Image (cartoon, rainbow, N blue to C red; front, side, top):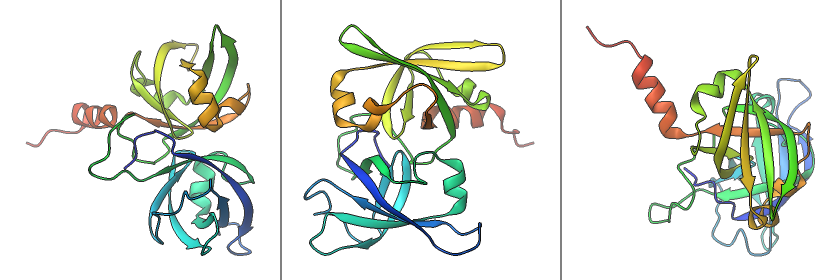
Length: 208
């Protein structure tokens, strides 16, 4: 489990195939801020842009680790198939503060940035979401964008599409990769965990 509070910005520095067949995934090498891995062990979970991954290798004394990502995960996420910056979050401990909201690290869908521009001291971010996620998105509800826990300020439905609007403060832009967003860019989305369970409770067949 995660909270959507980014603990560091890393960089994918290498991406190599795990096999010659298209069904094979890739091995990624991620550089981290100095000392970031001091409490990390092999097998620990770290979210990359909101996608939960397992640490499969670490270089002793070096600020980098490797993960193996399947072709299925690459197909269902954005920003993990090539080199570049990524948001990092270590799995939460039982005694951690829940600064954001409950996040599972499972990407529910990929959205597309439709607008990203300054508004006063902040920035407005609009994202068109997959239509199947629209029912889980609510005004003042929580959503995770590339692993960052954010609050929905507005939801616009119509024309067979759903667009959400989010206000980003300067601190968020400075300490995550969201400052590099632009219209047309694809982002990983995870809906609120509680909304997912409520939907299941309301739609699941009741026992006879």
